[in-house]
Picture: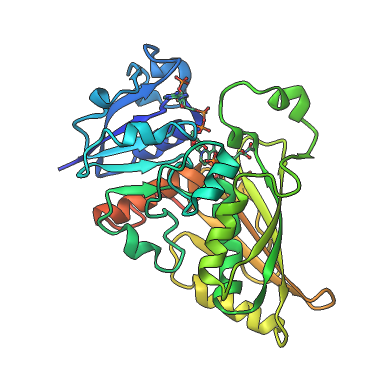
Length: 342
Ligand SMILES: NC(=O)C1=CN([C@@H]2O[C@H](COP(=O)(O)OP(=O)(O)OC[C@H]3O[C@@H](n4cnc5c(N)ncnc54)[C@H](OP(=O)(O)O)[C@@H]3O)[C@@H](O)[C@H]2O)C=CC1
Ligand SMILES: CC(=O)N[C@@H](CCC(=O)OP(=O)(O)O)C(=O)O
């Protein structure tokens, strides 16, 4: 029997990508679709690519509308999920694609998000050591941020294998859909086209504590992360260029071997053949993660690069992958690793 799923935030980019994937998921029946300012609108007017749902009308985001579903996805701005989630019963699988339940440290949450901390749910990055066990049977999932997904998957093997010192430097470029659909001056076409620019420089981006949390969980102590995001003139995709100082005795061979071991059995993470580099176009619309690693012997640094689609593995695909695990389905059900390049 199909699992009935509601999507709150169905008019947004993350909700739209989720619906694109849910439409081809063999175990899911799509139930209520909700919005905020667009409640009452036809979905076809807001997400014209989702043809089979064009005549569905968005409802208000209330507990009453979301009741009666086995799974409820929350694709809402951060800070909005907790109030909705607390009205849904413990038997409902609630998958939060926002940030509300990702961080363990309340002080970090308050510093970067400026509101009281709502709590911490099992973290939806199955590739992290121990994560699958926490997701199995869970009825609450916190889907990671898009940058933390890319950066964590690039660097975790270096830390689990004990090859890297506890400091990392990350520069990551994101497509503009990462910023959501609501109008923003810096996202005007004439500001973005033909230009790249940094933002959140100097440790100010709210994804920094999430990266520190993930890497610190697998390293032999706390890891500092210097993270600089940049906006790239493309609709989707993240390319994360990460580096960490290598520990004494590290070689190109030991780095390669650690990454091969870490990702040999992962269905979505592909360590590329030597000499081939990740590209966002290769993962466009797919749940795949491309990873490559090199050892810069002169600088004594491990360089790890990953590419994801921020809307797919970076949010909606990652959400479905974790939902599959929570429901006891095959992890890859309804998820593709096939990109649409060029
Ligand atoms: N875009 C991305 O690449 C990623 C996004 N995420 C997360 O997913 C969530 C949604 O992001 P995204 O889709 O990009 O954002 P959008 O701005 O595109 O969409 C936001 C959605 O939330 C609804 N909404 C806005 N305010 C409220 C409110 N007060 N109560 C209920 N619903 C509300 C909007 O409805 P309406 O349009 O009707 O007003 C819309 O459906 C965010 O938490 C984001 O951080 C996570 C990873 C990646
Ligand atoms: C390009 C761009 O603006 N990207 C967003 C990341 C969005 C996202 O994934 O983050 P949350 O789910 O944590 O909000 C940003 O830097 O804020």
